[in-house]
Length: 187
Image (cartoon, rainbow, N blue to C red; front, side):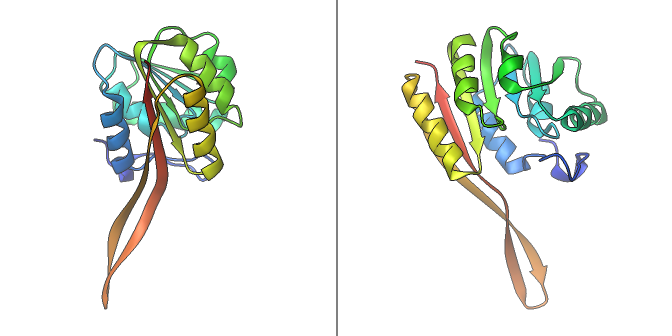
């Protein structure tokens, strides 16, 4: 696993997804070296970099040009990227030109989550996996409902990682990156 402190960051781009969360996403995805992965809403590229180490091909999409630029810098910093295609564009539009997906990670949807999930479903192979990360309650509900409508059996896990900070009078636990991880496999 790549360490959080090693990533290039920006105030204007979300991420990177915290290391413990990335570890859970990797586990839930059951990624292998033959998989084609799509990362919609890649932010600073934390998830992209992890999958680039483990999958055959990664396509990372973000509407924010600065996110694509920082993801590229992080890939270069970690000596990754030969198997990564970066697309600066709207997630739904960019997915139109992607075929045969094994794993889809949706971290940002620009209010087009349902459209994105429909497109992913139409391109996901017979044993494909979808993982949606969500902070907003509304996004969690929307993702679960849409996956059920598409005939998936989604599971949802609320993750709240806390790290301790040693103070003079004790240890204070600080929450980092509270997030829901919604996962589903194609039936």
